[in-house]
Figure 1: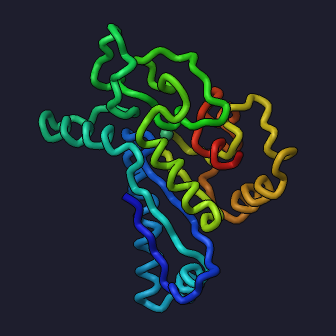
Figure 2: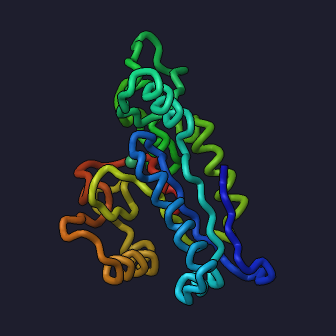
Amino acid sequence: MMLKIDATPQNLDKKAILMTGAHHSRELVSVQMPLYTILDLLHGLVHGDPEKIALLEQNKYFVIPVVNVDGFYTIYEQYMKTGELILKRKNNDRSNEGDANCPLQTQGVDINRNYGYLWGNEEGPCSESYPGPHAFSEPESKAMRSMLYKYQDTIKMVYNFHAFGPMYVWPYNGQLDNQLEEENPDAQAIFNEIWDGASFPSTTLRGNAIKTVGYKADGECNDYIMK
Ligand SMILES: [Zn+2]
């Protein structure tokens, strides 16, 4: 499901900002972040806040609150049964598990390792970051790819929200030595400008995956979009 918010549909030249949540289902607050952003903009529109009205006049907003719908539903289902939140990160695709018989929490494919740039297959099926048998093997990443192609001339910026820790992460997450500055200095400049203009908590780490989470992330969504 993708929500589309366009407060001035008569303006046909407007570009869109896409926000997604829950590539990783256990990062629950990553669903609230894009939804809250939209609510805040619409609240501002209704109450005549000039800053929010300007943002709505400048851009359209696309929101996919939950990319990993199956993982998210599994967490909900388990919570309703037991009252406990399980830390399930991946989807529910067990087709390549073989005899591994992974426990519920680690079944499936990591959707955010299943995209088609710098995809790698070093992890077994029960790993938290199992990337699937090949790039775009999963319905969720395939649907994202189709949507990105459909709106490639409309979308100008993408925020994929995660909630693993206090981190501001930019591509390329599949590279140890990040080449973004050399390959796309304009994009790097935008990430730097956001960093300078926003008020992140003082403990926030910034950079690609190796600089933030501390490991390389192959087949990652942001890398695919940037490429
Ligand atoms: Zn995540």
